[in-house]
Length: 101
Image (cartoon, helix red, strand yellow):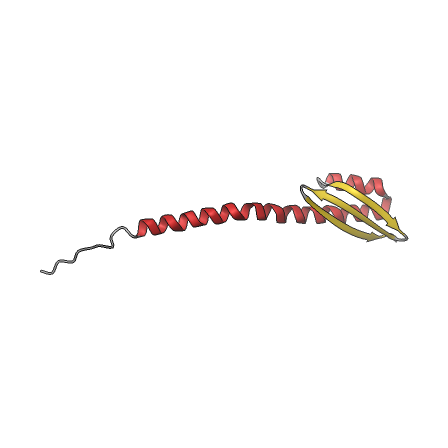
């Protein structure tokens, strides 16, 4: 009978642990990125809504809509028929423009 010595036994466990560790590191690295992307989208949505409200009803309406969207209205200005707003959500700022009709 031929006897075969197994020298490579147990190689799967370290490999699986390495893959799991890599997955954990990737998840921990991507969570802040996901939060940043979410804040950016929420800031832009709040800016768009505030600009439309500001064009229709003025700065007070823009501020109210921004606050309803968990954003702070940093600036509102109008020139002719155009209105611009700048809002902040978390650390992210967004700018939007709307036209008065």
